[in-house]
Length: 220
Image: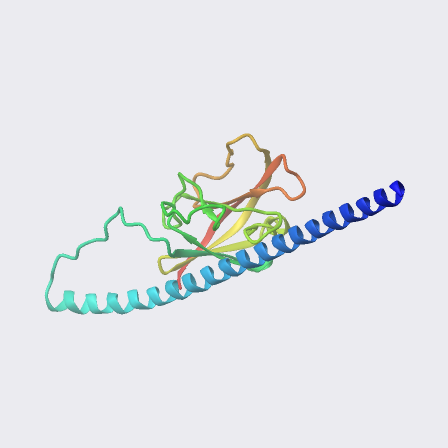
């Protein structure tokens, strides 16, 4: 009798553990699905805002030119402290089918936990000889926006769309560094550059750095 009772208790324990594992797996799958849908919705809304805002800016610019021609006036500039949480530009890398918006680096949405992240101290693309530095997660999950960067090679191109211009960059240097809390960026300081940073695939101790130089700038 004691043996039968023990067998029943073991069977019950195994069944309970199995049920808990199934519930946990279902929760993780559901969570990642919901998060991916949130990112998709966020991308869609911000993309629409970005495109519509550009169209509105063009119309406003034409009206402004007409007003200036009729009667010169002082135009008030935007407050330099104004921060928007909407996308202000896009990073596109056709080879890995990446097209991701980025926000103002002062925005609370500028985080690797929410978007691709503009690193503090970066220069925006319109700064001559500046360095636009973007970091992103790799690995698994909805926020692994840079998961496929490892497929890039020297000579591949990346594009930044920002303030009505399209900037084309060609990758000139790819290297790894140990994760020590800071990164050394090896670039030509006589060039305008784009630097992409992410964790190295299948190597938790290093991070990969991709440096690209500007080769073309044109109106969208």
